[in-house]
Length: 321
Image (tube, rainbow, N blue to C red; front, side, top):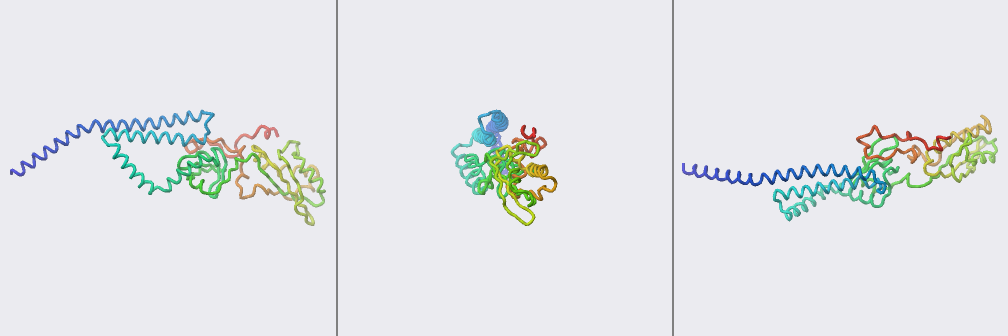
């Protein structure tokens, strides 16, 4: 009976001490929760505000906007977590030791993710492409919508969304179709052998369409590539400046056919017009910089507002034609 009475007293004393510690600890816990809630709220609001401010800035490249917003948000969240832990009495020395050990464990477990972060930093530093550029790798090809710390967002020429880890863009060969100021285009034109080559060459070098409008093919070159018993294969090659690539690719065959029909009649119509450059493996034959939609960060959430390739308004000089 005496043993039960002592046990009961010890239990009451333990409960009393526990209640006193809870009363002492409860304000600190409530304060930590409030700090954490306010910090998360501020992180979301401030990051959104910074994103809008950077979107209106004309001095900052759009490529840097998303990483800057993400870094600001993560920094605020980390600082909030440290302050909240300090409110409940966690010592910073012990916290740093725990964070160091946890960071090592997480780093070993997430090597691929850290590789993506390192690749993202290198992409932002060396700038092999920017937001709005059309790029091609062994796995992806599309218009760059966003470059983040972990992944990049691309949109293919037919409107598909591509979620590409940064390491898959950094550790492979990459072609930027929007970086060059001009590109070389080439076609083969097969015409009957009875057509004088000099006249055909003059017609192709005229750099004009059948209605007199310029085709913007700079430094055109024409030469005889093959000669058969019935046909002659002529190569037309020239440079096209940025902003005219798509229009020239899509209308050259039509113009060449109309020129030969106008000059030589139906019997002089080319038997075949084939594109040599860009090749069939080159995705730029589907679109060009002047046809690419404007880059935007709201690609996923506002997909209906994203214009499709080929639907953009044509340049003023192309419309005049």
